[in-house]
Image 1 (cartoon, chains in turn cyan, red):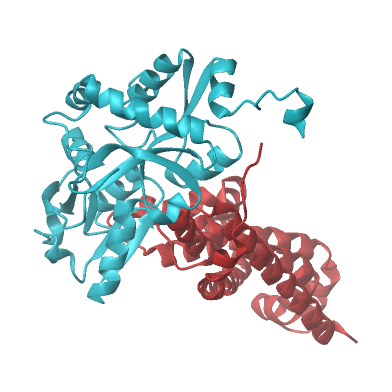
Image 2: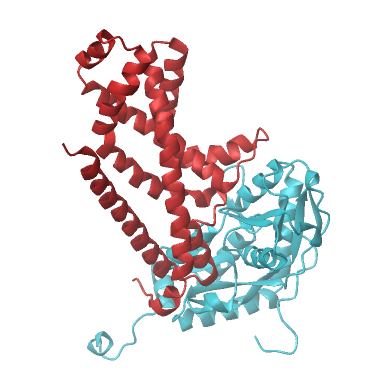
Length: 258
Length: 221
């Protein structure tokens, strides 16, 4: 009706809104190094922060980083506080019923980090132990299911990655499964004594996507092309080298589209 | 601006799980209230005792419990004590944090109630040959509990709502914990939060009505 009243002009979609407003607001988790963190001056830094800035540059607008803890990503999007989530969000089918996911822009491998006092030296060693992970993450869901399957031990979800490592260092939990990037960053930070990465977790590679409102096809199309261009131009490899180090993981799965 | 289609059908499937969580919530609230009540009576007695050390303990407890956020009290019970190698499970930490808070507020509540009890009551008890402890237990305490009863039901409601802070210390069995997990899996935030809000409301309402019914039984002449 409104569109007809405007003489057949199509209603502006979110992509137009962003370009028109001059600002791209990204939901970024700043408690998830090296993807998102704060430097000594409290300035947001990390892979996701740079990724958002690249996206804003491509759109010809300013980037605004909106700090968003993991559990608040959806409320932030739904209430219109952010335009796009650049928040290491696993692209599960369950979540895709709620938000529009792009093609993967990053991939995580999962590793086990344990407290030296716990005696855990492998993924299997976690059986019967008290384990934890960041509530709502891909690895937390997988780990909790594994604990249920083992039928012994217990699982504790914490609100932030920092709390997980704090609990681990204090011996409140014996081990955690996290992305290798986070595990290395935390172990190397020297803030937590007695922690070490003891092995890999046999969970599938965690592909993460950008997300926005489900019906914003124009924006989702743009984001997909942007992700493709980041890889094509070598920018993905460059950012990966800068924040993680080593060869960037493959973002495609063989023998299937998308 | 708010573009969201509610999937009630999917969300309601989680109702049994959420009700299980609600039972844990109620359990923690009731236990924390019982522990808080015992501690609060002790704190009140400490204050009346005239012993400097005991009344200092009571004063510090009440000061901290009343003037710092409940969230910190719970967080300290888990991560604060954890620093010293004392490990409370999320359940125990949540229970301890809320009981600590309850005790502080209830003690203040009782202080107000004490003021409403005339000094002559104590003097009468003493003149009948009762010891100070007997006077407190048999004459002052019953009157204090009676005056403090209805304000204390407020604290019970507050205890129920405080359980939702357990998510910060890894609590996943109570209503807030279950809701958070469901949310993380499916991102159906608003359905789950709406259902949780209704359940919290109903528990609180139920407790209020139950407390009123109990008061009617206990306090009629």
